[in-house]
Amino acid sequence: MTRIALPTGVELDVAEAGDPANPALIFLHGFPESHRTWRHQIAALSGDHFCIAPDQRGFARSSKPGAVADYRADRLVADVIALADHYGIDRFTLVAHDWGGAIGWAAALQHPLRVARLVIANAPHPLIFQRSLIDDPAQRAASQYITVFRAPEFENRIADMGLETFCDRSFAPHVDAGKITAADRAAYLDEWRQPGALTAMLNWYRASQIVVPAIGAPAEPPAWTQAPFPVLEMPVLVVWGMRDVALLPVQLDGLDALVRDLTIARIDAGHFVPWDAPDAVTDAMRQWLARD
Image (cartoon, rainbow, N blue to C red; front, top):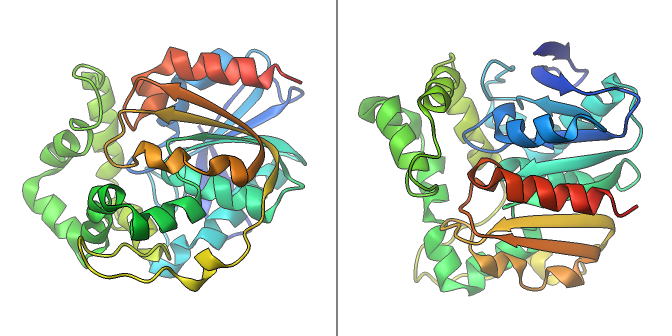
């Protein structure tokens, strides 16, 4: 791991693999993980790509700013661009899962001249996600955990139940039995035990502007969802574990109207698809990356 100080005010631990002369892949993980989300893909693709995988702000041993506002999307996107600048990389392929995927969508929308291609794994497009939270009862019900995670001092409840129990409850419903090894579990627990880690990770939820209405409550769509929304022009690969119980397949509906050059790979896996079905994800990426 390399420790990199960014002009955005944080220091990130970053895993690197491959020749810096090769095309760059920047990998973003989600909650409650680290760069290890993408360990299988990095190992497989670093032979002909330069792979960069940070522990994002708030996770593992990277910096953990104290304010909720420090985890707004604009600041997280700024970290990604600053990281590319650190390596002298102008255009790159962004590969992102879960909360990392939320930042991937945002980075592509805000910096289309920097993000040459985008790979998303089980992370909803912001417009489709927000609309589904208003209009789709099943997705609204599946997303109630977000409200729970946003509750003040929810991290104290995690501490009370114990990190081991939280680990079992966080992952067990989302992956096939046996997919988390003893070494994986130990690595997660070590990362979560870092000072301030639980609060920092949960602050990603608290800083988000996504509205999650209560089940059955009347809800008006936010005004921004009714306005014209920009269409992404760069090629986008969406890899989706179809057994995800938190982010339902409805997130794929209408995506072709928001992405000009869209490829969807539907995979028999759960939410944590990069390591739940690593070979399928790697194969989908390799075929798609070879198109050009």
